[in-house]
Each structure stands twice: as structure tokens, then as C-alpha cells.
Length: 174
Image 1 (cartoon, rainbow, N blue to C red):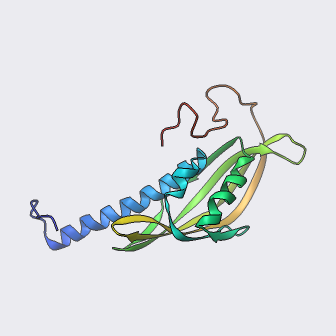
Image 2: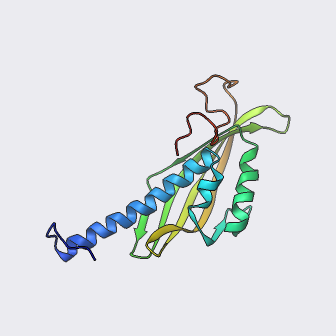
């Protein structure tokens, strides 16, 4: 262990470690939302342990099945925006849990092929595990509260619209 050159008490050092662990888990939550929004599938895969479990209600499985499932799910949307509330977190030295409210807005064609916007309301529950000094997500659940479908208010296409965001977009910066 490194020398305590700041002369912090044991309680203060423990509090700093707690803040570091919470920050690592919070960063995983943020990275999850951005990876899905930008369709950064390789970046998304790096957030989870190989043995992570997933439950989205309409699909559940393991890490090997998650990336193909979420890739197919998101492929139909020309826009996606995950807005997450401030998470409530309980993080220890090796494991943690967080729950955050969520409003996701996606744009895609309806049954008649006309673009519409869906607002999806729910909660994400994240479990985290630290292994060999690295934090990753060990389980992810989504609990749906409801969906509101709205007609699109624009046709997109202009540079300031977030159409077709992916890792090839010039503004991708994850």
C-alpha cells in the first residue's frame, strides 16, 4: 500500500476509498448510456463481466447474448437518448448496487412506416463487482414504467439533429 503522505486518519482514508469506488461505478452507468446512444457496441461490451446477467423483461440472458440483442433492438432507431436520474448507490469494497430512474427517447418507424418518437420510462438496476482492482457491471435489470408514443416534430437531416449517431459520426467522443 502507498505511503499516507497526506496524513489522513484511517476513517478519512476509508472515506476516500469509498468515494473512489462510487465514482468508478457511477462512471460505468454514464458509459452505459453513452455507449448505447452512440451504438458503441465494442465499448459497451467492455463495461460488463463475462458472466454478467441481464433482465429486460422482454429478454434475459448473459453477456454473450446481450450485445447481439441490444444491437438488433437499437438498429431500428435513427435516434436514441438515455436520460438517467442521479443514481441511488450502495457500494462496498468489492460489490455495489445502484438504481436510477430513466427516460429514453427513441425515434423509429411505426407500423405504417412513419417516423415517431417513443418516450420510454423505467428504472435501471445495476450490480457491480470489482475483480483484480477493476470495476465492471455484473448484472443489469430494466423495470418498465410505460411508453408514450408521439408523432415526430421534425424531419431530421439537419446537422444539429442527432440522427444516426454511431462511432463513425464526426462528433463521436466516447
